[in-house]
Amino acid sequence: MREMSVEQKLSSNKFHVDEGFAHIEVDKDASRDDIVRLAKLCPAGLYALDDHDRLAFDYAGCLECGTCLVASKGVVVRSWDYPRGGMGVEFRLG
Amino acid sequence: MGEESFDVIIVGGGLAGCTAAYVLAKAGVEVVVVERGPFSGAKNMTGGRLYGHSLEKVIPGFACSAPVERRITKERLSFMTDESATTLDFSSEKLGEPVHASYSVLRSTFDRWLADQAENAGALFVNEIRVDELIVKDGCVCGIRAGEDRMRAHVVLLADGAVSLLGQKLGMVPPLDPHKMAVSAKEVIQLDEGTVSDRFGCAQGEGCAWLFDGSCTDGHIGGGFLYTNTDSVSLGVVTTIGDIDRSDASVPEMLGRLERHPVVAPLIEGGTLREYTGRMILEGGVSAVPELVRDGVLIAGDAAGFGMNIGYCVRGMDFAIESGRLAAETILKARESDDYSAKTLSAYLELLNDSFVMRDLKFYRDFPSFMEKTRRMFTEYPALLEEVMLGMFCIDGSEPKKLSKKALTAARRVGIVNLMRDMRKGLGAL
Image 1 (cartoon, chains in turn red, blue):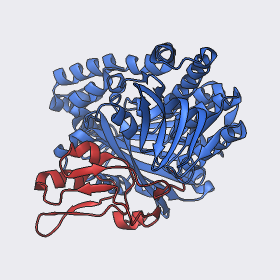
Image 2 (tube, each protein chain N blue to C red):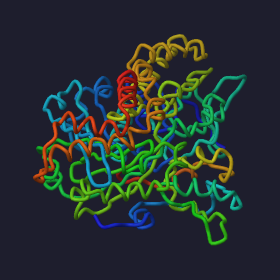
Image 3 (cartoon, rainbow over the protein chains, first blue to last red):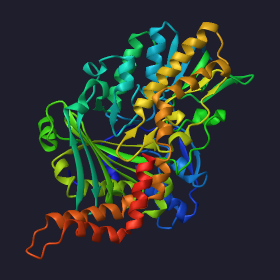
Image 4 (cartoon, rainbow over the protein chains, first blue to last red):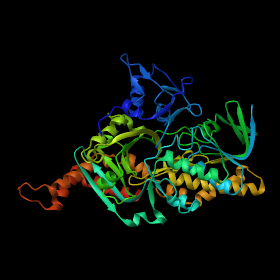
């Protein structure tokens, strides 16, 4: 299989992005270490450091695994809920 | 807004929820399954292999009609360094015998099938509804609220998955411990049926389950997995969340590392990525099982912490199915006296204790801490095996050494005492 980035891999998935509701809210000014931890853990690669060492995050593309909720222990992730009914990722294979 | 009433509400249309719904509906109970996805299975992912024994009790011969991928008749376990893999391969028709057969499955299709069976038996499914909270009156759960809508029931079964926000809101499920949870990333790579059979040496309909220990997770707790589906393979990694600070590699990079490994790369050559998924895996064993029963409510499946990873064997789905069935049996019994108090529902705990669910979780209770304390499993031991194997199989005209001496030299690098101690502890934990 050809090498692919996480973004390329995610593009094979089916998503119903809920534009009206951010199911994860984050603290963009969290510490560098806490951001890096989530950047390493998130299977969808949604957490990243920007050029100013601040958090760059987008909930579109979320696989709804809950890892960031468990790993952050209240830091970085301010609130975490599932997307509203019918929204978010839809696994066609799972 | 609307307020409907049922005998039983089940939150979550996964394996635990669908099994419970099937058993209850067959017994004539008015049961509704509330699922947040567009259909049952739309939010569910497994590595994955289903050990069939628990579903066999509910739907005998299920594999003849259910969308299983392949019956597993080949087990492989590899210890990997960056360049090598020392692999144990056990192939046997006996693995596929009905009493203990296991199957590779894809949850989106499999759970949907199970939901259909429950629906045909009379269960009602309401999809695309996210339950926001349980309605509690005088300490007793008596329904659910989703937005403005409410539903009432005598009893609610929470089968809402590894991240049971509802169980947490009730105070039954504590916040999840990063040292007892792992994260998994998986991809399904499309090949074709003949190619899968040829590459893994499997007969038609038969398949391979393969676990990898070592370099793919950058030497820290976790591993890789590969399961053959009918015309695709599921390839993924698992790593303990609380252990990530020890690693430089990210989870997606670990998966990339596995894809590129010289043993794995030829097996997925020419394949096309069909889907990329992630989930959390329960690794805490019996110590991660929360409070399971209160007035008017029970918890089953992943939400109940029923998961186990002992290195060569990863389980969760057979626990989910069994706990769903036992929860349903408990509700049927409670229905006879129309009493859904915690006291009556605690029969569920007795059923679980007498079942393989709690028995197996208790039996392997020491393994999670063994893994965490024995990091050599993921670093030095794969390298030790590589050294022994190279000593055996590399012939270059230099003076031969006795095999026992080669092994001893390699073992000294780890330390003979460490090796003996780890072996004793590992065998003790299993």
